[in-house]
Image (cartoon, rainbow, N blue to C red; front, side, top):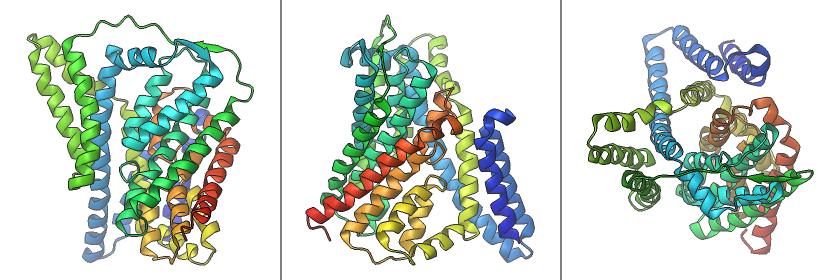
Length: 416
């Protein structure tokens, strides 16, 4: 009975997100409320001290995961808030991308930019920078939504081929199922699926768009902080790869360095202003993440993910992996992948590659299915669960094409 009650709360939270535009209640508030309520019920239902202690331990584990993500997001978003306020990202776009181009050309440029960026750095940073690229152009609301959906899919696709790009890829690699040489093969189907989505979304796209002119007057401090940001991205990848340093620690170190460099400005007002860029973070995003992760953690604790993993073993891996990837659009792909790994499925290399692609990209099918989607909803005002949903057919087509291409490519290359 308890499990059904908690599952109902998760469904109500999802409905609150879906019907946000109708009920006029911010999705961050509904998810946070139901997330907290579900854990309160778990504590109340614990009828012994031992059961209560177990719930406390489970909550602590979830809060540690949430705190890690929060601090990482806070660090990244503070950097991006500073760079946006100074016009550095927009200025970089003006130098690299033509100031005026067709909407169709912009789609392909944005798709490949997000794909390549997410392959070398984390999805959060790649999403924020890619959305910054979009905001440099004068786009209508519908165009913004379409390009934001393209960014979400491209960012999630780019991360699947490298252990530094996506946590689920790293989990499967560390479990010893795939080598780095085998993983890099996923760049081919990921690139093809992203280009296919850009092509599908470009149908009917007409007209030209232009970048918003930025009269940039940079100070030395701005250039130094930009250098710290990009150096932090590189250091995050290298330190994690060679020494296992958590990305959050590297980014917090970069953020602290940014504040220390701010001391080079002699006026107290400027020093204070640099620190206050933390206040420009969209805290709705952080609260939304908090609610979502509390709900997913609750579902994990009541055994929903374990039941899904048990169900997974009853079907052909080629079909089960595809469905598992699509399921990650509703359930966070990290605990879902962890549950699948604990189920110890006997898969060949072809199907391990299929699973890696599916759980990495499948979350793109819904706006709430990945960190990239949640961030996009907070940054693009017109983007909601429902407005994103209208691109589900195109997203599903691209996801399916990428998954099938992964299996075919593995078979052609003899990776069985």
